[in-house]
Image (cartoon, rainbow, N blue to C red; front, side, top):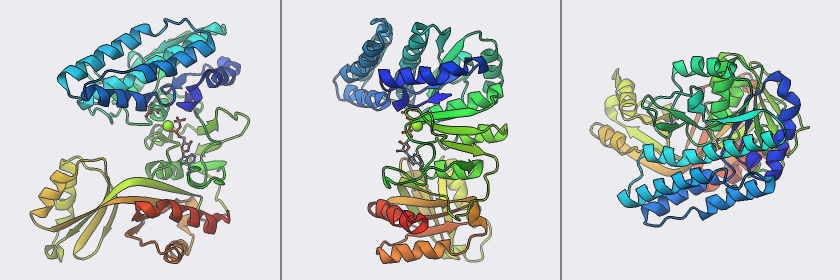
Length: 435
Ligand code: ADP
Ligand code: ASP
Ligand code: MG
């Protein structure tokens, strides 16, 4: 049972977490928690301030103290954590550098604190609960700071160690250890992934993701307020939605669940009676062709043009080898006889790729774009979806920079300028779902 930032963001929500978990103690739940809402961002901000020469953790302390006071916990419960955080920031201030390794150590404070607060509340309520840093239970990862992957041995270790516990474990999401016992993180939003890894490791009956909305919705509710709940979604649909921007699930969450065929349930901590969304291996064929629309912002498009591509074999291999060697992940691809266009997340360092490609091709990079993705198993046999997209975009005078169908037969992705993304989603949602 994973509880996100908002779900552990206030004394009232943490009490709600207790109300949700305590009736299920017989089922031996494992609780995974995110940092108290907003704390991860504040830690990153404090790191930036330290880089610029000032040390200030007052906002972070205030968030934690509000929880401590509201729940009546021991006021010194995390004093040592705040001291350790201050020492780290002092170090950053002195050397004026934050490496990815230091950044992971820095943001780990969020989860390392929240698990202690939640466990203390459960104990005050009379539950035999203890906090655990996930790496102490076996969350071993590779060395890829800020985006680490669990090692195969993690699953075995987590399974064995957690089964041996005789209390309710309250475990940190998001963080792990590399082989040198240095703290790594699974990427922003990674607590969902932690829950899925642990769920798969122990062979859980169900993986529950408790958040601040009624499950997976037809689109981002921050764009379309009337977005509706999806009662059942297939693993494939959920994976596509998460990968292409639906923040409600970390993109890698589905994989461990799918491997062991464990249902994932997404529910609202503030509205626990709502059934939320069940993610299963098969979802019943829905009446609508498109089930949901997701948006992935901060995308760049790389267009690679070369006449040498005509009739040359090995050309695509050569291009993708360059991306692969430079560790740049490609999301969407479209090719013509003389050009290849790909989209990449703008957060990545693409310069080395552009330099290498420029040795044999003309390369153009377009920035500030968004991918809009329509997803639904019904799209396999649905006709006319692309037509509707072009129709809506033409009516709104929104240029479509790229379109791609076929990477998976259950999705259709297209790229528009970031400034048009919300409008495009609103209009499509209205046309497809009549809302
Ligand atoms: P948590 O802190 O619980 O992990 P997140 O903020 O990471 O919560 O994810 C939940 C948020 O995801 C929602 O509040 C909503 O704004 C956003 N979101 C984006 N797309 C969707 C979608 N299709 N369905 C539900 N929520 C979505
Ligand atoms: N606290 C981390 C983040 O904000 C992980 C998570 O919430 O899932 O990214
Ligand atoms: Mg999240």
